[in-house]
Length: 502
Ligand SMILES: N[C@@H](Cc1ccccc1)C(=O)O
Image (cartoon, rainbow, N blue to C red; front, side, top):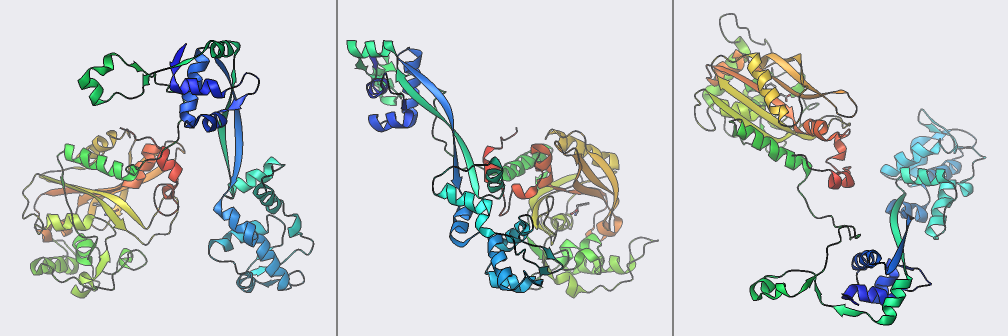
């Protein structure tokens, strides 16, 4: 009988009365485990071996668990420090006990969140007590860690679950195959098997020499286990940003670009945001210390914008009756929205005076001093855009969004009346989260007011918007926490495994 080389090697290494694992066969033949698996499947098809499969669960300890094995669990360290501070008699000051415990950074939170749960004591209004009867020696999680470290198994699925949910242990499953020679296999071996030359890969040389006609090709085995390789790939946020750009270009838009750190003039003043508007404080936006001021601003435009702020625009116009200084306008901030770019372009200072109709967009980062939560980051991507034309209406605005979002499979956007100092009317956009069913705010839009357009010298209508790219991603992929997608807490497995939608 003639068989490919790897199958012959596996047959020789297998036994009729001793089931052998793929790893062992790989060791004995010097072949890669995936090559052995492939050969084994072929041999099984030919009836020469039988394969038994079982699932093997292995528990591995994480780096964090190893730290705790060396130093003790944070809650135990806190308990010990609390005992030292006499907290088994009288409540002790939390700050002092934490200081004594030597716990640092995230470990403090970890200790606090496990302390009461495990009955080490109570934590209330800045004071900590220690239960004199608690016994760290019998801490189930600590013992389980020690057992796992020693290569023993852990009794009690609860402890294991707890270790997993604390990120201290990881459970992985793998399929273990063991291989035994069948009677036919033994007979074949006794009659003698020879190596057939098979070719695994077709080369250009074989094609030019014509050798391919005479060789025997190895069959592909798409079921064989292979080593998992996580190659680099474009982050889904970047992929989606590129798709958004392509979509907008397809809708006739041109791309804008400009500075991340910009004068408040472009970020706020041109947008008729009064200088005492709360969104202009450091509570909302980041200011640069160096350089503190922009070098150049167009004088004529500054004068017209100041006039709009002081006196309003048009016959019935009214200004803000609040202070306006060029010094504030010159201050440099990280842009809180990319509407600064729209102002630069609409003013004619970027690509010259623009005649209607015009369409521009950007998909760029913006920065806000927000509190981090599942839907907010300190920086995110905004899909900015505007259309300049004679006689635009709210229907044009809504129609544009419907057309845009439909290209991403989102067909149920809703509009809510809103207020912006720079647009009238204004609308917030909402979409429905595919898994939670909650309404998610995905953007803000409106028609620029006269107080914005007149100083810029724009005489027709301009409709405009800022949409959040990360929120679009949430609707497309069903993410619930934006921090899974980027930032230091991102979930790498999720990013690796998320299929790209086209
Ligand atoms: N600048 C707004 C978006 C917007 C842009 C243009 C017009 C109206 C709204 C925001 O960041 O939310």
